[in-house]
Structures are given as structure tokens and as C-alpha cells.
Amino acid sequence: MQHVSFSSFCFFFFFFLFFFIFLLTPNDEVSATSTLSVDIINKTCKTCSDRSSVVNYTFCSASLQEIPVSHVTNLQGLAIVAMELALQNATNTLSIIKELVNNETLGPSSLACLSDCSLLYSDGVVTLVDTVGAFLTGQYGNADAWVSAVMQGTATCEEGFQDMELVSPLTKENYSLFQLCDVLLCIMNLLDSDVKS
Image 1 (cartoon, rainbow, N blue to C red):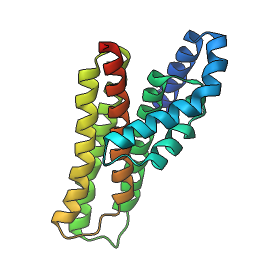
Image 2 (cartoon, one colour):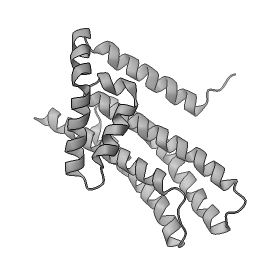
Image 3 (cartoon, one colour):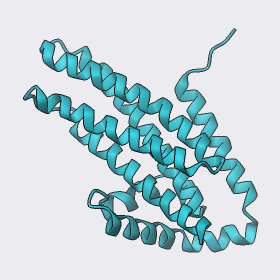
């Protein structure tokens, strides 16, 4: 029996998800959306950066435009893009942690912190996959709580190094995932307020 790796699963999952979203969008709406996609991204990022002291407009805009499908999408699609970016970040950070753990120059305190971060990021990856399912079924409350948990995991990872008075080798990754999750929370809140109005 052949096993599929987690990264392959994620790739195919998101490929079919984006394909599904694209097929559900009428062709004339796709061309109109393509024209307005940068405006949607810019407006969303402006709103999110205005609402959050964490979200950096430039980071948000550059991140959401990084994935080509975000150029032909709506607010729901942008949420999916943000989820994919967060999942990629968490998965890449796990690879970085694995490389750092193999660094023979790190002391036991650093290795203990990295071990904790590895557990937090592993849980975060699973949680982000669950978030996609909750989001797609309209369970925004669950998705919101789970994304918040991932954000807390990045903060806990960073604080572990600070508590040991060590310089974190994951500051950039922790902050990026925290921002991506904050963008995702903002987008889900915008969608939730649209549903309620």
C-alpha cells in the first residue's frame, strides 16, 4: 500500500479546492473579478491593517498576491488563499526546525525550545487543515477559534526562547504565521459580518 505524504495531500487538497471554486464562478464573473482582484486584495488588506495593530498592509497585499488564483477570486477565495499561505508557512517552519535541531552547535536549552516549537507547529498544521474544513462548511466560529489557537502557538514558541533568554531563530517565521492568521481572522470576520447583514 502506497502512502501519500502530508505535503502531497495538502497540494492536491488545495489544487482541487481552487479548481472547485474556479468552476463554480461563472466565466463573465471571472473576467470581472480578474479586473478587480487587485482592488479586492488592496481593500481587504487596508481594512485588515486598519483593524489590527499586527497586520502590515504591505505584507498582507504581497502575500495574498503571491498565489496566482488570488487574482481571480472573491473574499471567500482570499480566505482560502490565506489558509493555504498559513499552512505553507507552518509546514516550511517545521522543516526549518528539523534542520536547526540537527545543528550540533546549539545547546540543550535551544534544542528544548525547538522541540516545543516543533510540537506547536505540528499541532498548528493539523489545526489549519481542520480550519479549512470548518470554513468550507460555514463553521466560522470554529475556524476562528482554531486560527486563534495557531496564533497562540506561534507566540508560545517565541516566548519559549525569550523565557530562556535566548535569541529565537524562528522570529521571522513566527511573526509571518501570526500575521497570516490575523489576516485570515479579519477576512473571516468580514465574511461573517456580510452573512449577518
